[in-house]
Image (tube, rainbow, N blue to C red):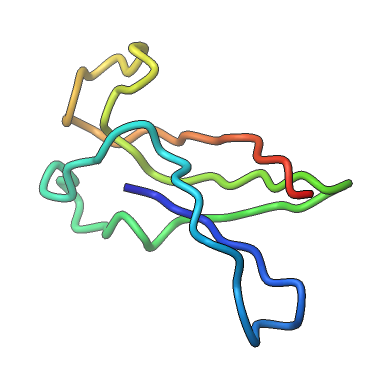
Amino acid sequence: MYFAAVSRNGGISFAPNVRVADRASNAEASENGVQLGDYTSMAFFGGTMYPAWADNSNSTGDNPDGTLSRLDIYSARISVS
């Protein structure tokens, strides 16, 4: 599963984790030895967080390789108030 959290005081404390991914991925499905957490990213603009992560859960139903197969890039839009 992929989660995110926000700090408003330079990392001294964090707001509660927010679940970003809809389903869990299968780390064993990565044929090339890449670990799921190796290639994550995040942008933040105008009070909105945009994380991106490797996922093979097929939670969107459009992974051409099917569920728990090869990794695709997923993204989300999270409003931070």
